[in-house]
Length: 302
Image (cartoon, rainbow, N blue to C red; front, side, top):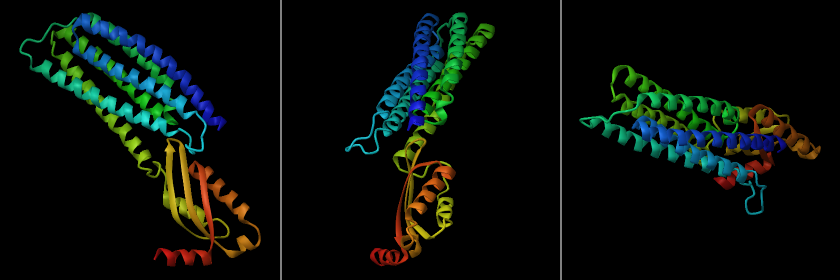
C-alpha cells in the first residue's frame, strides 16, 4: 500500500506541474491563433483545452482513489481513475470531430483567409517545447495507471499537433499555400481519434471485468494445479479494479491430507505468493475444497 501511495503522490505532483505548463501554453496558443487567423493553431488550442480539463479530472481522480475503503465501498475508490479515463476519452473524441468539421469547411471556402505564418511558427515551437517537457514528466506514471496513461496520451497528441502546426506554418511561409493550415487541423483530428479509441478500449476492459491485458488465465490454472496437494481448480476469475490492481478468485480442489495434516495455511501462502510473483496479482482469494465436496458441487450444478 505504501508503494501505491508513493506512486499516487508522485503522479499528483507531476500532474500539477504539467497542468501549470499546459495552462500557460493554452493561453499563448489561443492568443496566437486569433492574431494569426490559424485554424490549426486554434485546433491545437482546442485540443490542449480538452487536455487541460482531462488533466484536472485526472488530478481529482488521484485524490479520490487515495481515499481508504469503507464498509460501503469495500474496494475503495480506485475505479474513479477508470471513470476519469472514460471521460477523457469522450472529450478527445468530441474535440477530434469538431476540429475535423471546421477543417473541412475551411478547405471548401473559395477564398481562404490569410494566415500569419511567422507568429504561427513561433507559437507552435513554444507548444512543442512545453509538450516535450510534459511528456517526460508523465511518462513513468503512464506505465502504472490508466488515468495517467490517459493524461500522457492527451499530451502526446498535443505534441503531434504542435509538429503539424509548425510544418503548416513553414509551408505557408515558403509557398503561400494557405490551405496547409486547414490540412494540419485535419491531421490533428486524425491523430486524436486513435488515441481516444485506445483509451476507451482500456476502460472497457476494466469496466467489463475482462482479464487484464497480457494475463494468461490458462497458465494461472496450470500454476495452481502444480501446487503441492492440489487436485484441480475451477470457477477461475481474474479481473482488474483499476490498471495495475488485479484480483483473482478460484475454487481449488485439494487432497484430503491437506486438511488432515493442517497444511491449509501453507498451501494458501504458496498459492497467493505464486500469483503475486508470476502474475502480478495484488489480491487473491481461494476456496479450498476436498474432493468429496467438489463432487457434490458438480451434482448441484448439474
